[in-house]
Amino acid sequence: MLWILRFSGFFSAALVMIILSPSLQSFPPAEAIHPSNLDGHLRFPLPLSPADSLTKLSFRKSTIFRNADECGFSDHRSRGKTSVCDPSLVHVAITLDVEYLRGSVAAVHSILQHSMCPENVFFHFLVSETNLESLVRSTFPQLKFKVYYFDPEIVRSLISSSVRQALEQPLNYARNYLADLLEPCVKRVIYLDSDLVVVDDIAKLWATNLSSRIIGAPEYCHANFTKYFTADFWSEKRFSGTFRGRKPCYFNTGVMVIDLLKWRWAGYTKRIERWMEIQKSHRIYELGSLPSYLLVFAGHVAPIEHRWNQHGLGGDNVRGSCRNLHPGPVSLLHWSGSGKPWLRLDSKQPCPLDALWAPYDLYGHPP
Image (cartoon, rainbow, N blue to C red; front, top):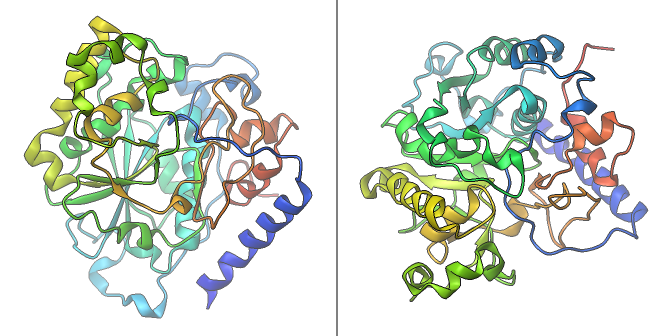
């Protein structure tokens, strides 16, 4: 019963926001983006190194969430004894960096709060800094997780300049290497960006039928697909011909279900890297890590309901303007775009829907 009651607060808040915000405009799908480093000054008044920034961060200890009776429970799943290879686990991968740690913590908190079986969720945290594990453990003492170091040098030489500096950060490309970083026994993973909250049971997303596909994601086939690539790309048949025989649709790479077995077997990391190399020499797109995924996977994506990525709530890549939800049910709220809810809340200039993120925020000391 408790896990059912957790949903009531969200839907009540969502209804209030929608009723009170008739002026919010509808919008087309936003570009897929990793949380940016923009507006960091709203949180830290002076420029700080990552180590100094970390000392300024403190999080309240999360409530301990337990499995419902329907989940079953056995001693071998108790804290400290769970094997990452346990076939009953739901695997979730999220990046951790100092600038967006607050968003990542809120995302984890939301997943636990809305899961019927929170003790069956295993988190794989991708980091390029080595001092974040203790902070996560102190915030979520019972959390099942492992930290994986991603060496920025692996991808730095492949990264091209982008429309936003945040999209050039090496950790933004760590998702390309999940099949290499995670244990071989991990056959499937849900990848999530750090600027979102889950308001439904993550097990439902985990149960996505990928069929023969490598990845699953909500697709937006009404979006203008051509805008994700340059005119030179479309004029060069050796490049644009990659979509011949496919019906490519835009999808946001901030929420994906990935079949790691198939990915490893077919070497999809190398395929993505190859397009990044072409981009370095021919400039075929402008937007970070998204286009290489479109080049490799668009037209071959297992469709997932749009409710699992209500994205674009961070506005566009420049103004970060307020936006409304897409029509329909909601299972995941995603603040892709330049406006992040914690920064807008701290600056006393929130958008109406930022109030739906706030209940999951564990930043700061207890009142």
